[in-house]
Length: 514
Image (cartoon, rainbow, N blue to C red):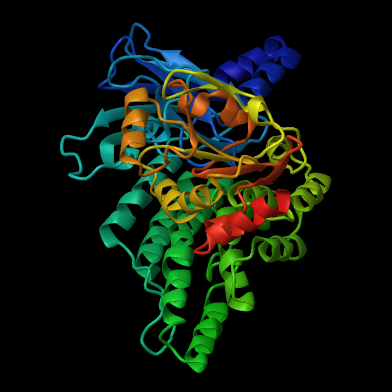
């Protein structure tokens, strides 16, 4: 009421100026945080999230990042202007336990950094003025988790707080009711293992519909439901079917496929949400990408990335298709069609955040000149990539504790190193992004991730923030980059190398280049 009276007086005195100020204030979002466990040296950061990146507070991801230090009242205050009207943000603590502040130039290893997330992904709207109280839970989980909902008690107040209270409550509803990834019964009939949780979440959100804007209500509903069902596609449906292929008859397998397509749709039943909301949702397009991977497996008998890509390209349109294709190219493993697929998406991309990611993905294109680097080996000698020009180079990026990295070495790289160890035209380079030299050297001794047949190099403690990681656009581990004798990238993280017969795929690729 007071704000309305002040606006009225201002309009009378200077109508043009007052309206301009009011319009600008409506585009602003203000967030004030009180973190009970914070010390005066703690620096918090608010991340205005790029919708294509994961729901974790990564300093490497693009998007607005706002730092704040504690003021005299023990508060952290953030504000930012938005032109989108509605979007997502989260708050994280930049200080590890030792009290050391990490800057944008020094990104810590992901597992450690996730411990600093203080909130889950939150929705903002223009004009929000939210206050967030964060307190460490008195009783913590007995297992290791980085989920802020399980580590902190969160309370919200102020303008725009209702949607945040409702959103966080959906987490607790699911944790209380739970769900099951078992998607088919013994008669191959589809069963929805998340139906009870979904119904309870829908009812709770609907009960608070009048306390939110229509846009926030729809977006919250879409996010809550599609976040719930996305894991079931891969961890439930596809896993069950792959296991059943060895046990069930052809007729029974066809029954599963039929039940899947009849029951699992692009849009969940009894959800009357606008296309605009679904296109904007952080979780909906992720659900669709995952669903099209499952669709492709049922239709073609494989998760062939090329078939998934073409399916998305032909079936969807607009910003939703942009998001799906860009995310798919970013997260799927390489194929020989990657360059052509990338150019197709570049031609149709209209949104800034998709265009920016596609520009980054150009670093994966084949035929690009290799990026030179100088790194230390275990003896402290400086090794330059340019030393090996004229040879076929296989570069493996990995870190200690990465199960997939260990699998790649044991099943693919180790075999290849033994076969080509006496061929002077082939060099294997193993690059660790471990944050600690001691950890790296210990892994070298154990021999679980690499061997002395490879040239073992270290990123000098810079880990994932080392320039070589961004130069080669490394976004997952392990990543295998093959460089030809002319010093150009021949292939980037080929999907065939990650399969059971990955050694054969790798050796075939090397032989072609010799």
